[in-house]
Image 1 (cartoon, rainbow, N blue to C red):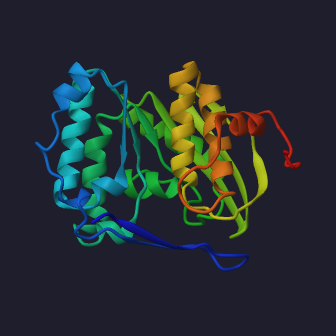
Image 2 (cartoon, rainbow, N blue to C red; image 1 turned 135 degrees about the vertical axis):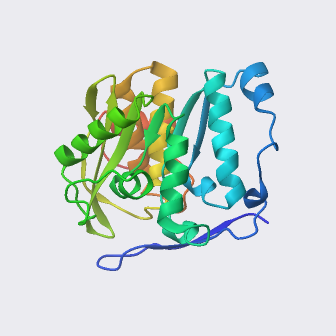
Length: 262
């Protein structure tokens, strides 16, 4: 069976609620040895490998498989990106927060591009963010300080990136992103009071937009701008799969309005 994710969108003062149903799925049964990484990264020459904390949390064997995968990608020079995506409901049956940090800190040793929000970095890697106890709004400066601490502990990080979300209500959020690369921070265009139809998938769309920016342009500023714009657009459509085209993303980055297009 495939995994399911039930989501109550939320509205106004009622926050969104997500309930993942991932037990006994085909993906959760995967284990080390199931993939020929030398063929994938060596012979086929895959340029970029992306995975994250949700897959690692599906079972004890998927955690082991994730470690095996990032080590193999590292060996072949494949870029590794990882979205921390901390989900306490998934980790609680396989060791909870302690196990989450143990697994994620091992994986982090082999990651080039680390992605996560303030809760992810705090829970999954153990880095405190000043003000993180109030998760609806984190000061950019405090998050930057945390990232600087993280890249000192994990010097293999070439990029560390996060979305910044200030939740006014479930249907109105301030949205932006920051990205650290080569000793410098890059901030995306800001989307104040972004109207949310369905917030699920915003983080994944940020990650994929960021990856596109690096693969297409090898430019950190473009990467964070594409990521933030793509994530913003994903919040305006139902479901967690992006429906935005490249043209729409580039229009949003350029400040295009919401007038009807015929």
